[in-house]
Structures are given as C-alpha cells and as structure tokens.
Length: 313
Image (cartoon, rainbow, N blue to C red):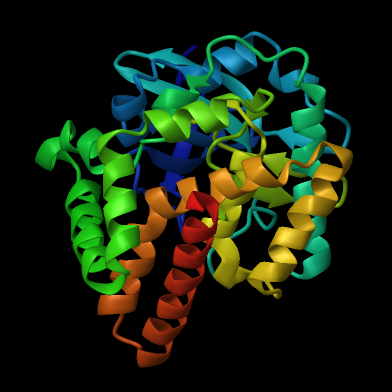
C-alpha cells in the first residue's frame, strides 16, 4: 500500500483528534475522493496493544460479512512506513457529528443495525479483536497512567475523577474506584454473557446514516464481548444528542435486543459505563462555563450513579 496517488489532501473539519490519529480528505490522481486516517500509535493503539485491528478485520473479509443494511467505509488499510493508513469512502454529509440531534426513529434504526451485527457474529466471532479485559478499563486511571504526559487525555480524565469524588455519593465513589483498582469482578460478570463482535466505540462520529445503510466507522476498538456494550457506550456518550430521555433509550435497547435481551447483563454494562465515563459527567457538572449545561450534566451524573447503585445491589 502506498500514498503515491494522493494529489491533494486537507484536514477533515470537525475531527476532534482525541485519540491522536489524524483524518484528512484526499483527492486521488484519478479524481476520486477518499478519507484517509493516519496513525503512528495513537492513544487507543497504545492502551490496547493494537497493531492494526481494523486493518485485519478488513483484510480478513470480516467487515464484508456485515449484515444487509449495515456497512463499513474501509477501502484499504495497511502500513505505510511507520504509519497505519486506512482509506475510507468519503461519507461527507452522512457522518453524525456532536451538533446533531437524533430522533427516536433514528436511534431505533441505529440500535437495530447494531443488533443485526451482534446476531450475525454471535456464532462466528472474528479473530484478533480487542479482549474484553483490555477494552473495559481503557479509560481507567491505571491504564492511562502508562501513557504519561505524551497525550492530554489522561490529565483530563484524572481531573474528572477528582470532580467525581467530590460530587458523587461516597459509597459509589468507593465502589467505582475499587473497580478501577480491580476490574476482575466486573470483567467476570460481563465475560459470562454470550460473546459477539462489539464495535467497541459506538458513538456519533463513528456512525454514518445513508439512505440505505447504517455505516460503522473506526473499528480500532472492536471487541469480543457482549453486544450490550455498544448500546451503553452510545448512551454514555450521546444521550444529550438524542430527542429522548434515558428511559426511552433503555427501552430502545430492549426493543433492539428482542428475545436475546438480558436485563442483568444490561445492568452490569451500565455500571461499566459509570466506571468508564463518570469522570466526563462529573467534569462537565463541575466546570462547564454554562450554568444550564452544568445542571444538565449533574442530572446525568445522578442518573448514572443511580444505575450503578442498582447494578451493585
């Protein structure tokens, strides 16, 4: 694989770059347009030991086994010198952004697409996925400590957990921090659930809605584990971007899963969501410059604390 046919490239507007990867829109010598992602060991790669997870899924044909109505964007993937380079379809206008508000019908469509993926791979999980024990603690303090000061996210996460310790009830703070120190009990509970291919980073910028497909982008955190992780990841990251409340989101999860839904696994996964992103809710609840946003984030934090307490009970 080479980049010799790229004649023009510009950084992609709206890419938050938190992982450390760069994304650009490129024009090729034949006039076609693609999106190119480059990584020389971004945050996800460092903390999960990823040496080309998405590239392997593409080259093995696993992504081409996605069920009807669900697509991927990868055109080619491989190493170019020290970089991992992925070429993707240009889905400009279809990729979801953080300024987008989704309707209940769109959420149902996205969740239904995830459910078909989970069903399709339940009996044939691809090789080379992120292990569940690696995925669960990606944003835990001990995991990020290995990154040090080479990336800005660990310091932000640590600040958020300090806010969490101040804002959340002491019993929940103790439980969450105990899970950070020893995630084995949570891992054992979630590992007992049926395994499938979970996308692993099921958030707005990694989704595109076209007239015919729900396209799943960025498979670098693709995980062998229960599919419910994808719904919880979405709820934890995107609840403020949907035109429905938390009760509606949980109802949408149950609808999407249908007969395969397991309430106890959902509860355990919701507790994981608190242990992974409680820092983010607390940080915004404590420091956001907009008082209305601080209040909204505090309400979200309180909801997640309630889910954590219910799961622990």
